[in-house]
Image (cartoon, rainbow, N blue to C red):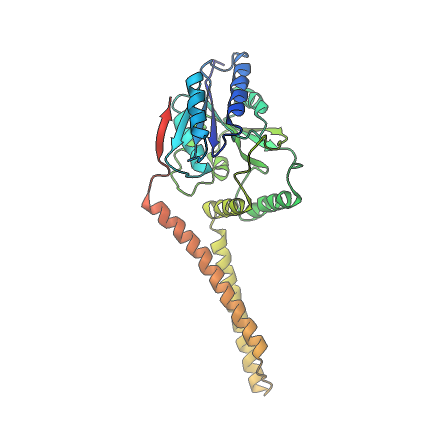
Length: 315
């Protein structure tokens, strides 16, 4: 196979504590892979600053001045991790034959990039980085993650279990991903929809070298909900099913009430009445909330606003 160019896309938000070390490690990995004559010496690292409020961007500028293989994109504000990935891929695909995405903290094992490139050389267009254990996670996070994958499977959404956003994509796979124009982006759910030949590498995730996680519980729950509502309308169908069952139950209760009336056995019960009212009211509010969520996402898509704004590009 002729030498191919690799670009590693690194989304970064307030990563001043780890960014310099992480970039040096990635550059060293690229140099090591280049010795196998699979990669072009033009391999580079593209960092996307997602509106950081610390010294992340000045660090990127310094790294770029000292090594032209380090490039940077700076958002005008924080647009979110998924849009940072999209922006990086959109810029990288202009010159790269293969693109690896990895978070700046390098908790995902960067040494596996060499294995990803080898699988790409064997014909894979998409190579997933998959965790082979979750020992570093708390019991709560491990249990909820597995439950989330099972729930999405029941809703008809195909995800690669224990895979986040550490992956390699060929040029054509990346270009195909970029044809998906939605604003409510859940990349790990879109990738399996692309088709193409896929493979996987397995690794153990390590603790952060420094800094704090950018995905606390609140963000994780919001991200999980985005994954459901962006990829399936199953919750709306569930509301339809619940409404149908409620109507059938209501018909049964009408028949029961008529029979009790004819038999003279009617009993006025305040408790049962109030429980029924609260239950039905709660179901209605939840149903309206779910439907409203979908309508809100639909409104966002219809407006066709830019997904992100780039302030500066270092090439």
